[in-house]
Figure 1 (cartoon, one colour):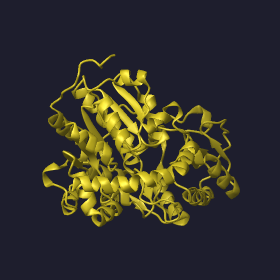
Figure 2 (cartoon, helix red, strand yellow):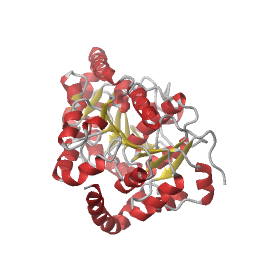
Figure 3 (cartoon, rainbow, N blue to C red):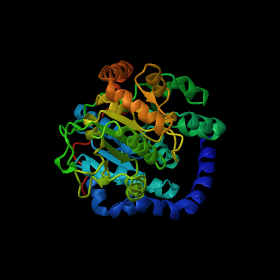
Figure 4 (tube, rainbow, N blue to C red):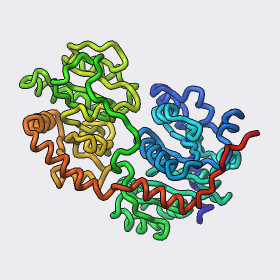
Amino acid sequence: MKRISLFIYNLLFVPALLILLPGYLLRNRRRGGYGIKLAQRFGIIHRQTVDRIGKGRIWLHAVSVGEIGIGLRFARRYRERNPDARFLISSTTPTGLKILVKESSEWLEPMANPVDVPILTSHLVKKLAPSALLMVEADIWPNRLAACSALGIPTALLNARLSNRSESRMRFFQRITSPLFNDLQLITLSEIEDRERWISLGIRPEILHWTGNMKHDPQLDGKTSLSVLPKETGWSPEDPLFLAASTHAGEESEIAKAFLALRLKRPNLRLMIAPRHVERRQEILGELRTIGLSCSLRTGNNDASSEVLLLDTTGELSAWYPLAKVVFVGKSLPCSVNHGGQNMIEPLQAGCPVITGPHTGNFEPLAGRLSAAGALIRAHDSVSIAVAVEKLLDNATLREGMIHSAASILRPNEGATIRNCELIESLLGRPFPKEPRRK
């Protein structure tokens, strides 16, 4: 059945790739592109890079920024426990790859994720000969998985996420998807409730292990925070900061309208918007100026008179959370072009009360538990956002209570990263080469 599933996958994937490739390349060019690593998307790796990678690295794949954060957290902790471990980490998006390039070192090699074409994938796996293939959350590449299995290379899906949408798709195509997932040797679950759902989808119970969510594990990975507002903003430390994080198209205007309403009573309130895709900066600037707000770019010349700062950098958002009084987390409002929610855990861990829209399917059932416990406020539009922000700014006790409630709900996830490390150590038996292979 696995061969049939793989055949059907390739029958659909390759033509779809050819049809969608031009639009995909154009979209990613707008997001900054892959630079000199574009060839890696097509399995072309320079001889010098191959020599530097050597053989025996753990190949860890993550789609974009959120998954990259989980992957880096796991890799750092795993390296602490196993100093000889070396990683090859691939990302599908240019923004994710930029973060990996910044983190690159002798033990961490970044790579643009190669397309999953059968012959190309098989050749690449043989050339790199990873000691394991680890994938983060939901991104499974069947040909890569099959190539590794054929060579006896251990494979695992870490921090597996099963949204309602993903579950519906997998259930509809269960006869095709279950053999592919059952080819894995390990799936670590972020939510204990998900175990029965995976089993109902035809996945072998013995490969399912609950670990907790690494994304919600307390920050222990060396991320730095800003102790004060950067001088270039021109803002006073006494000015309360309202931060809108990971927003998508349609949400910035709602946030701006809420901010304008709040400024009538709080003229010293400041707004920072951190869009999920920074290539939208000019689009957002135009919207804000049309509404009547003055705005500066984080990467440009800032003006102290600017009411709004647009954070158009990559990998800096988490450093701003401790400076914010209130955080809104995007991809969650009804007006958003995308739904499902973004990571509301980081701001909660940084001690910020959080507001989201009603659409947080990517983070259920956790978001529901947070909301029920009063650790998360839901809003639907600019009016309800303004009401929630004002309530939080006026009530320090309410803010503290939300953070305390969030901490009690997140506590079971403490140690999730270590539990994942232990399972991978057991799977691999720690077979790491002392030095990379050199030709």
